[in-house]
Length: 486
Image (tube, rainbow, N blue to C red; front, side):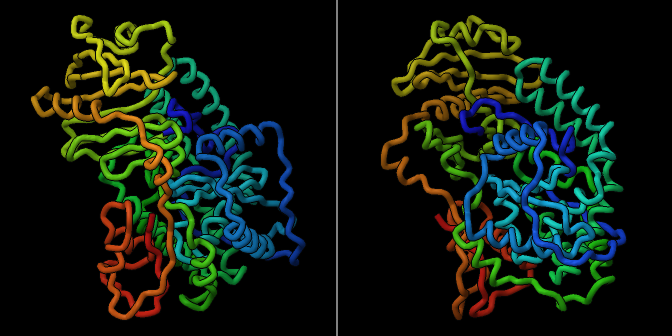
């Protein structure tokens, strides 16, 4: 859910000025030019008005910049080493850490690079992070933006047409996401080229080039862990969807790395990396609203509600989405603009939703807040809709069920009735989850350490993925590992 909960601007990656888009999940082979002599790092990136606008859109859509001087210092030193090993040491780069739990990174053709804190938290050492940064630098060096100019112009047309289609954020998001995936399919050769160049740059900068294969594996495992969640957020819909199968990417990354060195012979810099990410925020930023189990809380706006049993909640850029196990029921919670003089019953019957049974409209009071409800019928789904006025905002619950039952009615009613103000104590206690780096003690196991994790589902699997451990790896005393704490 966005800062103000209504639909946030959607970044159409690969359009106009982005040279790369989506999660960094593509590595292949290509020749690497000889390095030029080392030059003094240049971090002054020239910004055109279009690039500045794109930068602001990215910040708006990804929660703004994440401020962490220690982490910024590590990334700056890593980029400096990579630049010195590239064939364009005069090219300037500036890295912005995005305050988002998504696993994502991309670049503007000017040399502005972006990595989310979610990606940083997933990586286990500096060589894995360097594989992402060098891949995005390769897109800049190969001038892929200019090659894709025609496709970008097409995307701009689609964006304009979609924007004029109306205010339905789901429709807009779906159209933009489809455009993004279509464009990505044209760029595979460019991705393969950037993969090879990036692995080569990392190797020549004396980072372990096998970090690319390890991080690809981590991202695939992370995606599988999230596969059970249903999301309409276009920023996560294209995860791994428009690039070659992961085994192919991992194999190519490994083959490219072997051209430069043997496994284990270059620097991973694990201890320095773990020290830099210790205490980094993990997952959602509570100030923007967050999910804890079946409950959604928004400390800044001061409310909370709980989803029904057996529902999984997903906080997206457009709305909070809930899906019942088995997919027979779903819910959406968002904010809508309703004039103060318009009654909530009139809003429900104003035509924004088809087939509303006007006779079913009912004025309500829910926990002291004015509200209204109505029923709507579709071909395959039945809908129960609530609008609730909280301060100057109107929040909307939409419940969908394939077959109306006593349970579906109860789920809708109990969820809406759980909407309430947060207490001052609850607001003050709404702290973000963080990554904590600890030393394993004698007797510690994957299972015992995962049980110390807070606020995450499937803790054993998540612990293994966060620490780059396969299904059979075990923990030894004094190993430094990441856990999630509150």
